[in-house]
Image (cartoon, rainbow over all chains, first blue to last red; front, side, top):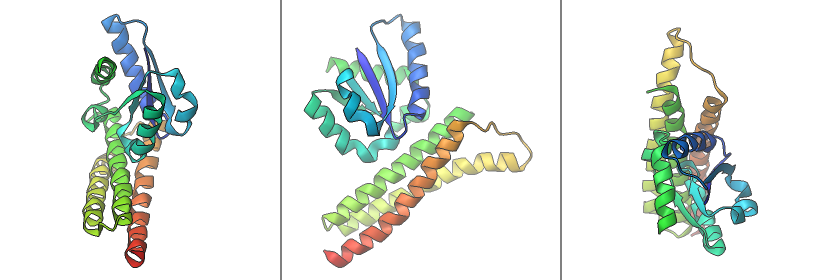
Length: 102
Length: 101
């Protein structure tokens, strides 16, 4: 499964991605690809991913992301600010995994 | 609060403020000016929260404590400044909609 974290510049989410990667290792999960990208390039890369998580600071672009994901048949969610604010890799990973099951 | 959480909190509150400001413009576009005012207030409240966190590190620095100046902290400041501009411009844009609608 390929998970993309998108935010305005792909900068802060890349730190969150690093935390998620540690969590992936400690849970012994495999077949997971995690990456952070700026939202501007989302339309170019969306086909490479299964799940899109949007940083809450990019919520002003949610409508655009929702349309893009619906058109490409991808699942997406906005990372709740409670999780994001704590840079919680474990809970962000849980969010992605639960989204994949839906 | 450690440095990382300070940075992420500033980015998060700034992001909330920006989203609220954009939502306010969209409400004004639909003629819902009362909703727009509520959202503008929420945008300002989020900016205050971000400022309070920012103040905590500015105070530390002013008292001689060393602050880790990372690119990510600079990035958080970008987010905050950007959100403040978005809020300020959204006030003006909403005023324009009031004249048009």
